[in-house]
Length: 130
Figure (spheres, helix red, strand yellow):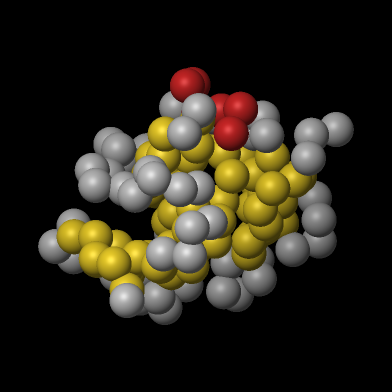
């Protein structure tokens, strides 16, 4: 079995998502396996570290790492489409925690070097919280 690195559920508790060092998987609220989501870009599949789910359950926000490189991506759960890489992601230190606002318009990231960022999805900006 692969190490589980992050676990999140939809606000209504109907779906559970986990990411491990090799996959992103979905279960129902009774713990029944639904599917492995295969849209994670191949170059990152071994290091999908963190996930957060929008309150309405329609989007997964993922922080993907590979050899010091960080990528922010959005997986649209209804369509199964993966967003292009979000530019400007901080990669000077590993992102160690992620959360999103209730409406999904902002994603909050905490880094291993103590920095904190807010990614405003409405205007696609990233700002450092001081």
